Length: 466
Image (cartoon, rainbow, N blue to C red):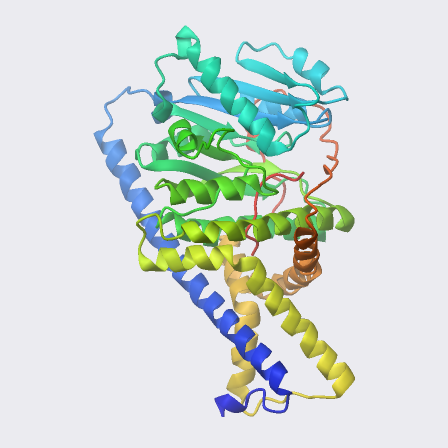
């Protein structure tokens, strides 16, 4: 009976649908495994925190005081958001902090706004053509060199070795939680941890599109990232990303740790893991960023992200390098193959519609459980993610309703995978910066403002909105 599921269809369609059914089943197994791993990591983290608190002498300095926090903000024509972002960073609870803004050839008022901020912790690295505007990776590498060659040579910072210097990448629209350094420090207490990624949220949730982006990012953090943290294989997102300077140095091939990729953060995170460093994700603090209220801008952003995911195929050869358990290795391969698996699933979806409309094929399940099985495969992961995201007793019931509009959003962005593949095959890697939305007057830098969230509102990408 199972073998007759797709029997009325042409042979080529049967093969396609069976392959995609296998992909969907494996995806469900992956999510269940990651949920279990996330639970184990959360329990381990709570136990470590209790033990550390019990051993901590009364009046001891906070954990974050052991590190130098260098907040790096790439900025290209960011006059709309830069004052707000820096005000919130200045409110961050960090004993030793430096705010390094990389003005990457701005032609608007970004430079003037930065010059008007009176804070000795703020440094501005101004890049001019032809060095400027060569991409985010080039800007971050310039900041990395500045930290090593200039900042750490200053007497007040000379005592911080590379393993105690944390580079924090925050986008110019980012609103980092004030307590993020302390949360990251608890993870960096393990000398083998090279990267910590915070939960990404969307703060300008005004409609369905930005609500769906917030669901996408938060679900990715609460399920996929949290689960991979158990193995130390969480991904870096490029916004709210904490990386140990020693880890960055270990993947520096000469030009700097970041490579010229459309998703330079994903590339960096995977290479750090393959170099032997652990990467974890923390969900108790977040970085809020702008979502996109325009479908056209969303498509442009996601095409760039999808093309970066296609570029990441070159990293498959390094999966065997780190000493990881078998499930972690399988997950690493699955993660890197995600764009191909998603595209194949999309092709099967379109094929089913074409066959139903053009050829008159009909599908009638022979038993009720077959229909339930397919509905569970299609909507089960989304319901689970939405329920976890809500964290209320009624969240599972709300998830049953919200999964429909979120599934529609997932279908809307599906075509970007094909467009990105065509661009990659044609060698087109150019991209255009996405304009920011106005944030209103700059905040006063209060701690409350730095951690605010809008009213409550799975991708493999989180981070910058450029």
